[in-house]
Length: 396
Image: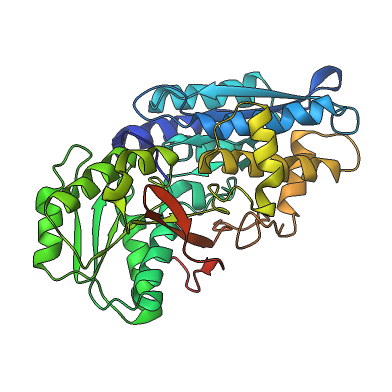
């Protein structure tokens, strides 16, 4: 899930920044001074693409824990760092919170490039990152990182499966905006779907740019006879796309989006022009005001003035998993004890997700392997699948 304006991160710059971390000496394991448990986060809080809701939701959880007396009497100090959407700033931010601040773990991070830049450094530092919003492919491939969200690649695989196996569309097409080093990961989702179903895409177009006019792509979908179209556009891109669909009078095609356009802002901006558009909610759909699964999350976010979004759900879950894990640690809470606890963590089930959260010692983490499909009708989101759509395949 990628919010608002898209940002293409040069892969070479990411690799250079990531490589820098390998030369650093591993910092000593640390625990909070004076009974304080220091927890860090590296997120994009400024720049072209921002993810403020995840870290804000994580902080809300920690603030409530502190108000209730802390963890075994120890307060949590949340040290958030802004990577500014810049590889060099991301590397500096990680080293500040991990080495200088001495945090015991990273929780609720949400960034387009934190994982690609800092995963080797986190692994070298023997620290875990429970990400609120994993975007870059490396977030799901590093043994030091386990995001709580589905992520754009598994999200795409679920959408493909839903289009071909549930909607039973024979001609499934895909239009992608490739950001940074995401092409191979999206390709892996397609290969996984083909291996699972024996089906192939009618059209696979990965030439969409954040500032592209959607018109030629929409018209191509109609010309190629697409019955279902998968698109990974951000909020403004999805709005522009569906406006063109309406203007061109294109009908008979199911438009399936990832999680990014699943927002109240998109619903308001499109109104009836968005009728029929699907999106994949990675968590229990937050627009379900009466959902028992969301009662605590909704109450806490409202009391702390955190926006009700999917990103906020991710930060809340990351912090909740972390706090519950801390409470089970016997003895001092240090970086070493926290890392050991997560490496030994048994899968955690919550009604907010379709599959359990896991960390363990796995080399790759795709914990959240399900989604609920929502659809725009009359300017409002409606849940289409009351049961979770669980992806039965694996991403290679």
